[in-house]
Length: 533
Image 1 (spheres, rainbow, N blue to C red):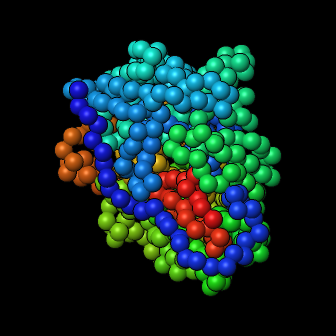
Image 2 (image 1 turned 90 degrees about the vertical axis):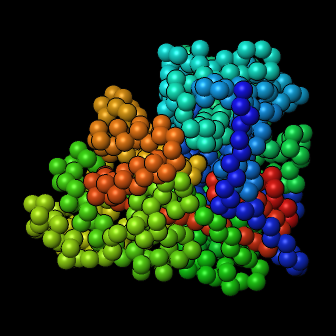
Image 3 (image 1 turned 60 degrees about the horizontal axis):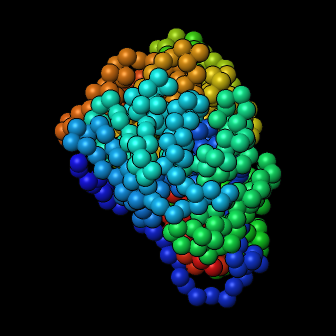
């Protein structure tokens, strides 16, 4: 058996903010109060979640088999599994469970919990299913592929020797591998739903915190696990308030009503940066803002039309203004910092060019323009970016009718294929090109009844066999140089022919009250348990 090698590619270090000061915050010393837009939160079931907000919260509530380190999402550490090893054939992963852990219910954490938790993700086939099924594990073989072989051992068997550096963080270090309390959850099963309905509003797992209450579009309250195996968190509770607008967040932060603001525009961030009682924390993320085009639309399905819209964006100007703190220009599906990414310059071939855009729509057969609906979220930065594109589109005869709505509604339209154009955000938890290519260029089954809502490519009805074949080829290529070259080829073609217009790679930007002395983050996680005040 081969011991699992750690991959230590530090992208974002842990952050310590340790400057003495006179406290101005009015929040309790043992409570972290966060203001955020939580209107897209609709379930706490790890099998069903798929959005940034819920994912962050649940990573502070449930521990997976393997953890990422505080320093980097690419460095793996023991979680519920105290150790793991990989067979010589590269297809068998064996996990040894940590002993003595207890769920909030008082039930012990067992290997049967792990087995049940992983299997149900596949059986339910919701948003998180592809984190497991992409590795050849299906409803038909899951009972054999994921097995508890004794009281402390779990064995997972794959059909191919997939790259360890991808499978580890992708399948075992995130929500697909959250270990649920199977004994408690099974009490709430209805009609074979594996407790899906109950877990929509409840949690049953071991982690730094547990869900105490949730009022949709109002508040989430987390309460600490006093016996957490990694050490008792300093914050007794975490309160997340629904504050979807930047101005009110800034005001509450400066008054000391909150400790952390998460929806802040460039103007308010500048004010927070200038205020001696507040500060900004900015860390790179493997996330981007992008526009989706419905490939069933007879106009938007034309590559030259999609290319034209990419020439309607003043990327440089927006980067200096609206996106000053929030992001940097990135026009390809693989973000900077991920293995296989194009260089900074190769990854942004488009610039504002109205004449070029007009030429392209004329070549596509629409010299007089056209009219389309453009669905966006109502929180920053969506209105700012969409209005910018709308104004430039009007100059070449394209009328974009912006429809603002709660971000959760945008996602629902996207997943239902019920849109013409949509602006949204997307992120992958591992910095490797495969994660992005597999979601944005590859489509396992484009039929409506397949309902692969977890794939943005499926949501927009994009299917191209060349991209599927190249994705499969790159995944199994063991020569890293050749694998990187394959991803470069995929990206260059996808920028011209793909169904998305990528705009900006994001930073995670937080406005912090100076009462926050320490908080650890990496490019993927925010660790509430590390907060000190």
